[in-house]
Length: 194
Ligand code: S6P
Ligand code: ZN
Image (cartoon, rainbow, N blue to C red; front, side):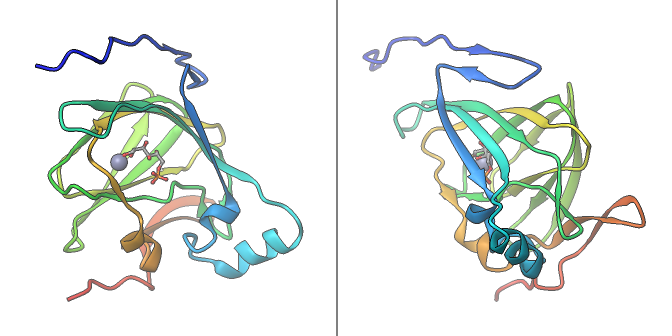
């Protein structure tokens, strides 16, 4: 067995979700402009000169090889674009056989899960909730609360990310606010490709 990679130690602020040392990626609205259903609302915000941060990802990345695990945290800000809550882009893992674990640390959220054939699930994410994402399920997290949604994740380092299939038509469900309530509704833009 190869032992060239030394064990690592990083520190996690459980409340804030800040993981150090790590690689930080910030996703702003401009990075997600074709992901929110209300493209008009997105355009209006961007044209007004604003580009709000939607989420931040702190990652401890290993070599992209079988046997290693990537892990980190995501901090998803509260807010809406039109009536749709702030969310991550969402992805399938390029290596279909790979899985992932999420652990809620703070805030109130949902995780949308979807198979390639369009079967969908929606699970709650909050402090102490552990979600197992089995192989083959696309996943997107949504902040439905007023505070930051913070969660920890861990997945196979060779999993890869497929964003293209999600970017084109989104997930089959949208998480929106209607009459002051959180609702999970059908995405009119979505159709299973045959
Ligand atoms: C990676 C894992 C998370 C997400 C992060 C941002 O497999 O699921 O680290 O990357 O929550 O979401 P997204 O969809 O922009 O990668
Ligand atoms: Zn993932």
